[in-house]
Image (cartoon, rainbow, N blue to C red; front, side, top):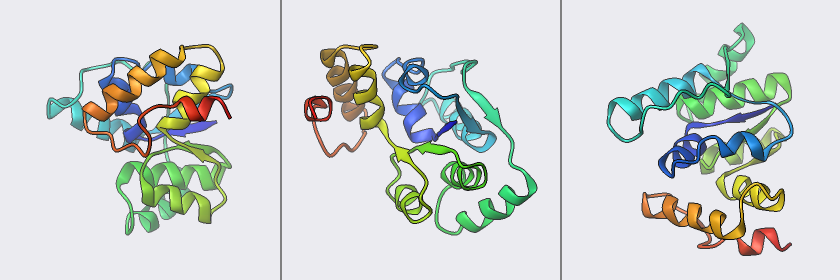
Length: 158
């Protein structure tokens, strides 16, 4: 399973492409209750539109994961902390664009990707075209996403 954090979910939601995330992966896609809470806060603040997310599995933390979650909270937000706690315990992958969460994933040997990786996978699989992928990235950047690249061309040709 791959766990998707709020940064990835909300950026795809802002470009009206939240469903495309599920098509990028061959494994099941899910997230934690903490991430859903962050999404709901985004809706309440008017930053995100209401979306049902019916295809996204909701995971509850076990007792052991809750202990780890509390340890990660010293360094990260609730969504990232919960995703990392579950990923470590259940040997899952994560999708996050949070720099600190990605550094923890590297330290803990958790396979990870982010928005750029998801877009590249969608293009490579033929789910979206390169033009659609670049348009989606441009829209995310216009809405505040900080990307290291302006186009995903280099990611899909390598």
